[in-house]
Structure formats: C-alpha cells, structure tokens
Image 1 (cartoon, helix red, strand yellow):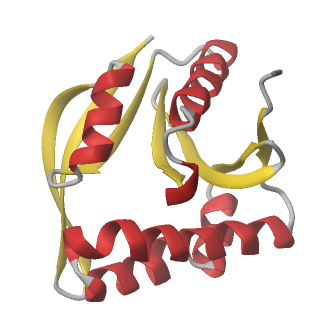
Image 2 (spheres, rainbow, N blue to C red):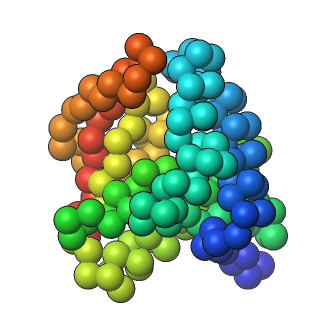
Length: 166
C-alpha cells in the first residue's frame, strides 16, 4: 500500500478552525491527567484557540495539518529561530497513534530544515509527559536543559528542552 501521509500548510480560516478543534480534543484527553483541567483550559485558550493560532501565524509561526489516508490526524506548529527550528507543537489524535505519524512528520520537518539551512530542531516537553518524551528520544532528540516558564494565571510549564541536531 502506498504511503498516504500528507502535510498541508495551514493558510485558511477553515484550516485554523479545524486545528483549534482538534487541539481541544487532544489537549483534554492527553494533558488533563498530567497538568489538570484548569491548566488545560487556560493553555487551550492562550495557545491553541482560533485567535491564538491566528496571532501566532502573524508572528511567523507555520502550522501544518497531518493527514493519513485523507483523515486529519494531527498537526504541528513550527517557528524558525536563530538558525534552528522550534517545534512548538506536534500532536496526533489518540485513535491515530501507533501509525508512525510523528516519525513521518519528523521526516518532513528534517527535510524542511535542510531546505532552509537550519542546523537543528528543538522543542519543550512537559517533564511528566512520558509517552511523548519516549517518542522524542526514539526520534533522536536529546535533553539539553530544563525550563520552568510562568505562563500566567498561576500556571507554570515545567519542561525539558530537547534538541535534534541535523
């Protein structure tokens, strides 16, 4: 069977709405046990809502929808910074996990970096997000630092900073 994985750049209001709707589903399911419903709701509004996504796109972020067999399975958000690619978001909905979509998205991002002359991909990941940390380590990311970021409303993001050098 042919590889049916596809990335499509988010450029329309409809795509932004689709990403925000999927973000809400994924965040409630995946992050509530890790950081609690209050912080999930706050972070969705601050970082994953339609208005937040539009603002990020204006600030130079790029979003890509991830499709497998024409099914919208996930998305990633990126931002080039200082010769590196910041992988701000990479999320796959629960029923699509196990299809190696994160690996396929990562191959796409590595190719993008090579085309743009970027030296590495870096990200932040919650220290208690064990499944995602395992995936990133499997892909070759290394933990290079830790970070506690005050995101407002009394919430802290307690993350590892991870990097993959091309």
